[in-house]
Length: 228
Image (tube, rainbow, N blue to C red; front, side, top):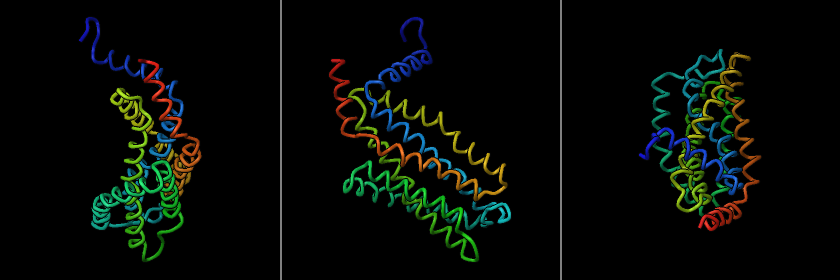
């Protein structure tokens, strides 16, 4: 390390440099805003789904037994592999950005159905089907987002941009659980709480269409040329 520096100071210095550099790639910045919103919704749904499924029916949960819930979780892990393959092919057919938009519509439908469906004696079967849809979009939407972001990064700055991507993702990951917890406290109903997460997917659907991928790629090439 250079004299008078530490890993911490160099790290934060690089983070400041990346933030300044983002001004030259505004489309990349718009994508990041959209990503942080909808990814927070995805992460929260994944985190609270087990709580929602196991909670008593009187609290808005499904009252599903632990053994059944374990089977659903294992099924999701298995099907997520095939989901990732499917979304990879879909991205080739219609483009990465459109594929993400399709996945956000499905995520919005998932939380809507979790609120309005899953009643009666078939709720366990319905939850299995809902878990299958979650598995199909879970890995694909996140993998395609990383792939799309890679196209918007100035050449030679992949490490710092992906570091910023991860730091910012972790920095906003508390918003979804906070909203879920607040809605549960206010209404005492987990169905209303999980429905509130549709906000993140709707915001993603609002912001993402405004991201101009071609301009983002052109901007990052210009940013590299300017430095040379």
